[in-house]
Amino acid sequence: MLNRLDLRGRGTDLAGLLPRPNLAGGAPRDAVASIIEAVRHRGDDAVVEFTSSFDGVDNQNYRVDPQDLHAALQSLQPDLRSALDAAIENVRVFHEHQLRDEEVVQRTGMTIRAFQKPVRRAGLYVPGGRAVYPSTVVMTAVPARVAGVEQIALCVPPDRTTGKVSPVVLAAAALSGVDEVYAVGGAQAIAAMAYGTDTIQAVDVIAGPGNIYVALAKQQVAGDVGIAAAFAGPSEVVVVADESANPEFAAIDVILQAEHGPDGLAWLVTWDEAVADAVCAAGEAYLSRSPRADEVRSTLAEGGYVALVDGPEAAVAVVDAIAPEHLELQIDGAVDLARTVTNAGAIFCGHLAPASVGDYLAGPSHVLPTFGSARFASALTVTDFLRDHHIVTIEQSGIDDLGPHVIALAEVEGLAAHAESVRLRLS
Image (cartoon, rainbow, N blue to C red; front, top):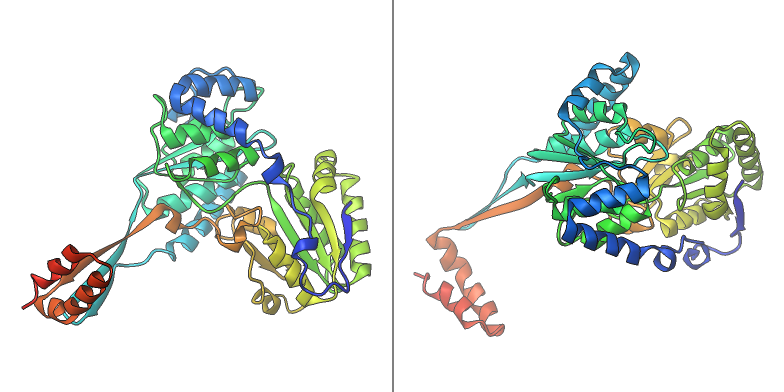
């Protein structure tokens, strides 16, 4: 099921020994750039053409009628409504704790007031194609709404058969406070939200995961529009397991992220060869009856590994080198080991905390950094939709106290007008 790497005896300097997807060499950067350029200059015509070409859907009017959201919500099965309500509540409560009140810092004769303001308009991307993801609607829209974003637009690929957006996705959008839904996906959706068309008004921030085309498109439009979180691309998981782990738990958790499709990573890391054997056997047993066995096997063939290491310290070295989107520690003393991890998007500790709980309703957003970007980035939060502002007021005593320092610094930099602007204000 998994490619085996024996890293025992190699110490903790393992970064150069670990395989990574070659996105730099094999990524469709030029193709994505041409899609973006076409949408930027031809607007809706290019969006419609690409949707027809890539999704097989000819849809001249790709904005979803608001009445369709209402109808989808009314037809939602009670158990799904209950699940979405629970997810929205957990995500809302968690993100409300990230908001902060205005802060006031006072020094002699000077006051600085710091506060947050939301962006006016956010664009969300929800993947489609292989599956439907109402959970991603919740995980992107609720933080934006908690932040106070005025307008929320959502793009999602249309179903190839019906040409429409899944009703459960529309229902999730209605419950999560989405204002507009567009049946368009891929790099063309990112470009349309970044630059605007006659149908889609340009946004200030784009958030949400996607395939390699979507992730690269977000990289390429960054700077023209804010991009929330880091490289939120194909899914990743590392499961660290010791002899206390349940092999079936570990196996299914390695497999579940591979369900999302190609280009992802799924790792098992252990210092016990018997654990590696047991987990792989349990994985094979599950795949023998899995409805998505072929897709999972394909993903694991390219990005599935079991690494044998010397112990917990070496396991953490592997984790930090991969910087995975999801990390599960199915070991004794999981929380203590988690505190030693530097690079991971989300960490799940213990035998009863699968990443799937985080995917749906733990509270933190499941939009997480991938492809090693957990080295410098984190999960989507309300701060991705907020800007920090500050106001400075100074009294005469403050100018008299601080002014000479400003003058000294300005003069050493050769900025005479900067120095004079303060000198004129001194008592």
